[in-house]
Image (cartoon, rainbow, N blue to C red; front, side, top):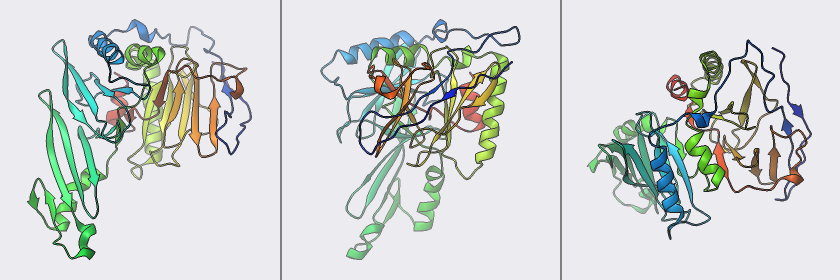
Length: 356
């Protein structure tokens, strides 16, 4: 199968927040032959939870709590193969996320988590974390979904930063005083692990709602056995290349050009300088798109316009894989935006989960 190489156009950047960018383009689909594994539409795959999620999101969108600052997320927090629905009302300091789970044919609220419309989640342990730092002290809490409720798993507090004020220093786990070495030992496994920030993956645009509910969770069913094997091999190679030095690496399957075949976005981490690599199918093989993209290990993807972009101190950079004639001055937001790049941990467990 002949490789389909994207056209690479020059980037245009400015020091302002004006609309600027570049365009990398490729054809909407690769030429098909008898050797190329055929895919199916993600929207032809159905899940029992879809209607309940749609109804809850529509209900919230029509409520007094909804605003242009509202967002939502889908993420499997329990490891049962079904995503939880997370609704973020807004981003003010007191805004927590509502977390819903679908079990036994019903959608139920398990609890709330986070501040400023988002919360930290540790997929390796299935725990949420909330932490507050005050003047010389910190308090924190890990929670887990247990029997349909978000319950406390571990609490901790430390006032070491108040040492200069002459106060008695305390390190506590679940309310029990501990020596510093024991306190740090009890928390180290939760510190040195992948962390996801959940709650604000999707805006409430029509295309966002459709993509989240009817497409995003279907890629494992869309890809045939041959392409799944190719994905597993490539992701395993990248994981080995990155190594154990970066446990914050992640990835996501995302259809950036609307051809019903996902690209693979690999996030090297979540630090400001972390970027994403993009891999696309050429026939039944994966090739890397030239360059690296994004910041904080993520991209913003306009689902309605099929444009992905990055925001930095110098402005915006835009790309399209769907339109060979795309230029940044043509871009107008559809209002259906998602964050992409950090859906699964770049581990054997994460890779397996993405292929289901």
